[in-house]
Length: 166
Image: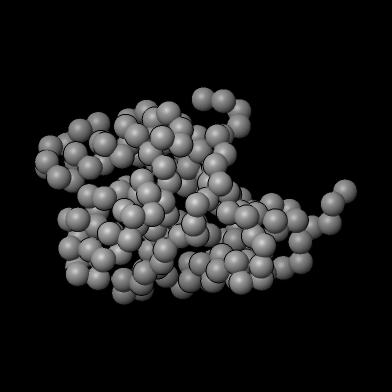
């Protein structure tokens, strides 16, 4: 892996849904965004749909906020089946966009925030419908459950004044 992750622009902000006390973030991330992610999607789907345990899929995630609050990065670190590093950049142009991420952080203070990634926006929409219909097999089979309790403390920075450029 390189010193810097591959950075892609977010095609959309995460779709959110509440399931009990849990806030679910459903984010489209193109399966071809970085080498190794396609294999992760395939393994996750096979594990869920065939019932046969493969090598599994392991992806760690964390947030990074730009000092000037111009963007937020969702950092994804693939471990298995193949290592990769990917950053999804959310450009923040309005107060409402910043408030979205502050709201995610505030939710994480009181309940879990989970992160799910899907190959495209259509799969995110299909997953949301599956969730509404309580079809958890389809919901999970469309993407990857990355984190069940995503740490969001870093996002609180967006609620404070940005650092000045030096």
